[in-house]
Image (tube, rainbow, N blue to C red; front, side, top):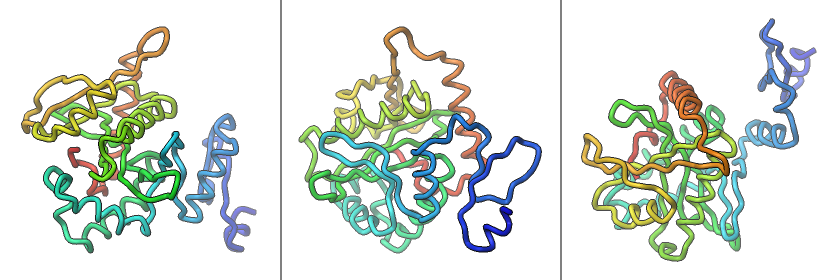
Length: 251
């Protein structure tokens, strides 16, 4: 029946108890994970539409699509951003190809990544913010990255997008430890990290600064072992499928 449905062009989702391989586009093994948001997500994947992630007071945070890339590239061309992010120094053709590959492969593989930051009032792109697995001084970490157009800095929007991302990371993935790796001369980025609860941890081997954020519940911090296990699982998956030229940047 599944093969017939696929032949007719249906997008198939199946339940697999682990005893067989189903010829479906998406497969789940736990009914508790299947709800409206689950089917909304996989429908977006099927239609290749960006998935909405977070809505805040002033911002809409969602996955990027190819049509967003010209505006994103323009942000990377701003002098204040080009200074610290070498991606802004590449030509648009390479930038576009890498980001299209990123959109196609990374979002569905991890369900997180670098997301677009849009103003709710007019849906204009003003930056990006998100999560990425990094190996920093031989330690696996989940890092936050953020870029905000200089036109929208010093308005509280940076804090709004970073804090929303931190809450989402804990709520959806149980990431209680998030790090930020920042160039020592990038003072606005350091100030933003500090204002969002990050604390200086050390100077890395490549001379960048490492800041860390620990999410505490009302009772106690999540088990360090659990956090380490989750981080290792994500990082190991990333190592098996490392086609992501965007990861590895330092913000």
